[in-house]
Image (cartoon, rainbow, N blue to C red):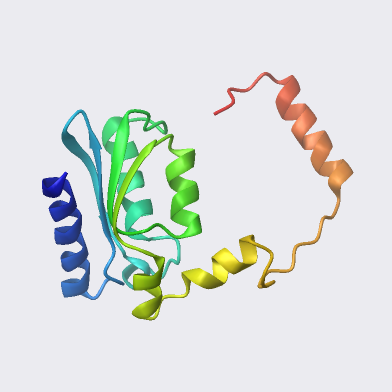
Length: 151
């Protein structure tokens, strides 16, 4: 376990050195081998979705030629934010190892708690409004009736 977390930490330091973003690095491991790497590149790519975990997931999917990372483990320097946790679940990763926790992340100035508060219904930060549901349901029906692969 230690070796893989050390690799995630190296990824984070690489990002810090390059001023790519925050101190977040991650590696994806399958069958004892690293298959994906990533560090926070939010500043470098001007993209708020380029967290270390998401970058590692993208890299692993590219390297393995699949969107399904069943059998993989994620090692990351911090407890994943809701987006990265969602990405981890969508990728079918079932084991997650993290270094720092939510409080540690908050202590260095990151705002993950606002997102958790929103999800828990404690604070509304996003207005959500349902519109044109009937048209969108038709879209869904068309997709379903075309027998597309569900993933």
